[in-house]
Picture: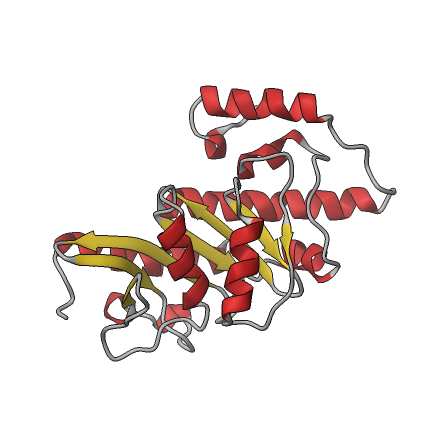
Length: 225
Ligand SMILES: [Zn+2]
């Protein structure tokens, strides 16, 4: 397969930019984590994903790996070892056009305790529900991990991965990255709040009001108040 048309070239460059931004924003370090975006053209139904084992500052748009939703890959590079959950999210979530996976320090700290983020702060609704779930542990790169992640992402746009990291999805790379940053911010605040004891959670009724407001007033990721 060729490198694709102009739209694919733009998407490849945007994936590299997002991966670099993930580290620059402090929500990921080194080569861990990965980024993908949905790709559809002609008879191709799949996604573009960062390659495995290549530092982001040495990753060129040409290194980004195209894969079909059937799991077939193209090009010389091997895809991220986590391509299975990227594939499965694109297969099952029509609302996902981009995925950001990071080992963000605070989100991962909570995930190492298997803790979901409860409704301790109203912005938890940014991920689409009353909490941000922590998916059960499975070895990285396995179908079992993908299955756990998909379950935790049900009716949500983000989840933690036990003893591993987090996933944020969105309609675009920008929104998925913004959500990953927000989840890490919430994880840090929750971790700090826990130093004074388990904080009281907002009620389901209040969280439903917030979710309704987010649905009514623009994109949740843009909510500022
Ligand atoms: Zn990972």
